[in-house]
Structures are given as C-alpha cells and as structure tokens.
Image (cartoon, rainbow, N blue to C red; front, top):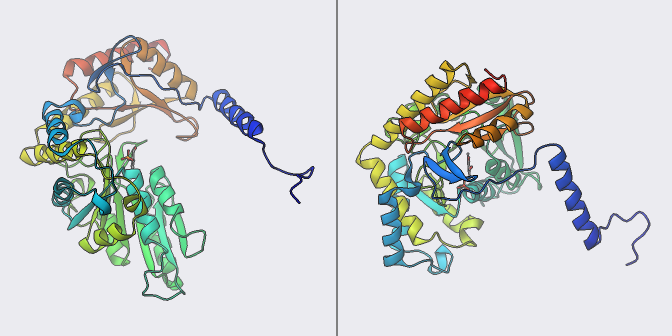
Length: 421
Ligand SMILES: Cc1ncc(COP(=O)(O)O)c(C=O)c1O
C-alpha cells in the first residue's frame, strides 16, 4: 500500500505538465489549436487589430450595442448610482431593485411570466438541467425516469447541462437526435410512450451558431404540446436578432409567448458584456432561485451590466430601427457574397457561413483576409463536418454599407487568389 506499483497510472506533477504539453502539440499538429488575435480598440463594426483597421465580421455584436452611446451611458450611470459590484450572491445581499427590474423586463420582452439572471447563459443552461431533470422533486417517489430529446448540434452549455441531469445516477435518459431532424425526434417520442417516463424535455438551440439557421419552433411547440413535453429553447443568437421586433426565433416562427423555457445571453445582441438568464413560468423561476447552484453559489451581476441591459431592452421596445438595420445589412451581404460566386448556407440570419471546403483553405483565407483588413474566423473539422470548412461571417447593425463593400472586395480578391471562386 502507498507504493506505486509498476503498472500504476499515477502521473507525477512533472508528468502532468508533460502530458499537457504533448496535448497542446497534438492540437497544433492537427491545426485545431485556437489562436487569439488581440483587438486593439473598442468592439464595433470596424476595429483595430493586427496593426491595421479591420472590418469586424466575427463578433456577436449584432445590434452594435457593445459601444453604443446609450449603453455606455447607462452602464456609467449604473456604476455611479449602484456601485461596481455587490460582493455577494443574490440571496445574501446581492439583489438590488435593478436586478429585479431587469428580470421583469426580460420576461415581458420574451412573453414569459418571469425570468432569473445568471452570470452567463452557459451557467443558466447548466443550472436548468441540473436542477430540474432527474431530480426527485419529492412527488414521484424513487421509481422514476426522465428523458431529454436534444439536437446533436446544440450548444456546448446545453450538452454540459444535460450531463449534470442525473445521468450518472440513471434517472435521466438522453436521446440526441440528428441535427434538426424532427422526424427522428417525433418517432422516438412515439416509441417512448410505452416507457412511462415521468418528465420529457425537448431541448433545442433557437439559432444554431455554426450554420446560422433557426429551428422550426412552430413544429416544436406543436410536438411538445401533443406529447406533454417541456420545450426548452436557447435564444442566445436570436434575441434582438430574429423577428421583426427582435423577440427572437419564437417571433420569427409565429409562436411568441408559447415556449415553456427560454434561455439567453446578455453577451451578444443585448449589449455584448456578460450575463445570462432563464425565462419561463413563475413557478419554474421561483424553483430555480432555490435550486440553481450557479445562481446560489456565484456572484450577482454587476450593476453597470444590469443597467446597460435594461437600456438595451428599452431601445428594442422603443422601435425596431436597429433590428431592421441588422436585417438590411444581412440581406445585402448575403446577396452580394453570392453574386461574387461564393457558396453560402442559405438563410436569413446575420451568421453567414461562407463555405470553402478544406480546412487549409479556410485557414489561408482568414489569414489573407486579415492582411486585407477583414477580421473573420474560419471553422473546420472537428467543429464542423470534414470537407465543410467555412468562414463564419457575422453581420452587425454597426456596419456601414462601405464596410460591407470593403469586406466583399477583400473576399473577391482573396477568393480568386486561392481559387475558391
Ligand atoms: C447557443 C449558445 N448558448 C449559450 C452560449 C453561452 O453564452 P454566454 O456567453 O452568456 O455564456 C452561447 C455562446 O456562444 C451560445 O452560442
């Protein structure tokens, strides 16, 4: 005992670091090592990076609020009137009236009864599944099983949330259906009727960030109702983006107010800093205030962020000028990039995947585009299927037409040089 045997798998501290180093080498060799190009300016439609001005086509700053004067002013006022931080979790002394106000405003905007803030949408998604699915709930005794139907391309935070949903103790089954394959999900729902599951949950991204496509939520709502399943939708890339007034995928699909549980982020269209939320029935939100571990054991959102997010919702409720500008910019870029001869994934979302085939082409294109003053990131296997490498363009309301034209000329030049068009 105590003596490592010859077959021991124990890694000494030195060996731990060696193993990490060899993992990093492997990532470099397989070209999956993520390199960060520092931005030397404030986030916006045009930034300074790599020693020059760049049209920014890689941020989630859909409405251009990351540096909007009204958002900056609201954040500054929030800091002055409510301080820098709360130095507490919500239930101890971390709740100010502005936190409650923001929760009410999110709920009203999304057409739900209530909402609960978290430090990020990642945390919110983990919180929901961990607190709800597979937990005994005190009403059904010990003999129960829950099931989650989840799109294979759902965001990592949903996948991690589901991992926390009592799978290990075998009270939860997971059925991961092929991307957007509602037929497969429906056939499993049918097949599973005999299994007498206690709780069925359907989980989907509203918008899938690698494809820029949205889920057909009208069909999801109908299917969830027919099967008495709880419908969860992550609206991180959709709130403030899709629908005429920016109320997201439910508005786009004509089912606003009909989704059981919505999660979202304050880190994209709604200001671009940090923060996330779960919105739904009041009883569910009240339950999460008691049971969400990331809510209970992690600090309250800082006032500057809370006040800025309230202002973002004010702006969306006042008129839809930013949303419609985003839609116009998106239409323009989608039309013009196709006219140049590029293949894109069709859609209406400001995420525009420009398909280039091989990983090496995507890598070369993004680095040549950076030299031409266009900041765009490539995605390749294993993030997307082999042979489907792409540049993921993201359009913002902050882009002027001349910014988009500059980007399009650079795409044309680099695309021709590399034989993509
Ligand atoms: C679909 C989706 N859900 C959740 C998140 C996480 O959001 P946050 O940055 O607020 O943690 C993201 C962020 O990329 C996302 O794309």
